[in-house]
Length: 385
Image (spheres, rainbow, N blue to C red):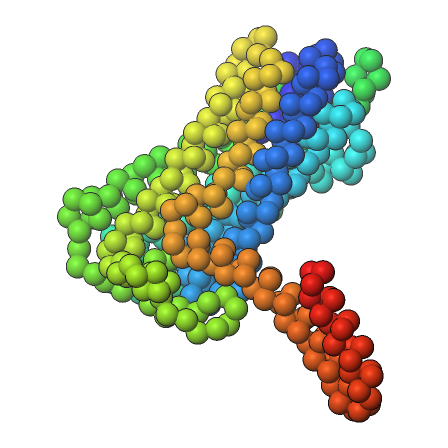
């Protein structure tokens, strides 16, 4: 769970806002660094997560149970970046809340929704990896795309209902100097149990579960590997189809590399997902630790630069996963590349169809001069493109 930085020690608020009269927040240096960092991280994160969603939805061999959970994680990360990161830019520039009462409630709700769904999605694919690797026979019936979709729907419904309490806990407040902030209208005594429950459910328990399950997975994969068994992992798909709907040979074979064994693929996928979990733990740790300490001390630590660092870590956690997929997964790397090629092919096909229409018009008109003019126009168009 996140909080705004507030000048009131007993009023925690959400991750996107400054809400403080600290003169550092009004300095040009702070505003420049804050806007640049947040805008850079959010841009990279939004583009990357949108690409993850697109490649899984448009590429048949990428539609696996694990990737379904990664799509849920990508959508949750997009929610965090849009609801927490982008409002932070306007806060840094104006120094006040500009979205009104409804915006305060809606944006705070979306922030917590995205944060909590991302944690649940990480837990879901961790359990899925454990079943797929440690119980391969059960995985044939339990680790399916349809089941993954039902679990994801349940996660989103549960989290949507759970986060509705923030509609009743937040409100805009006017500071003594006339500034408007989006803050909580509850005392520290009420906020503390809510935060501790959120901290345990969506941070501590998922990490403890991940440590235990990845330990069991490592014992199977690296210490006592089992014979190859059928599964639904990202790296074990054998039927490939490029995202442009064109049949093609395996990308590794085309590049002259021998295809990976199923065991090697499972190891690679597990490593990639373990890195996602580790980054989640590390990038959330500064902010979680700070808020936990501030919940118990009488004079909370609210250094503006350190709070900017904590918030940037949160946004980076939502932006870095597509980079990890691209670096550690050949499947995702090829899918990202194919998606990029498809856009260029679509643009080229559109140009070719337009030229064909011109040629058809020439044939119907049977006017040599018209055909000559059209060809000249087409050549010029290609030369200028």
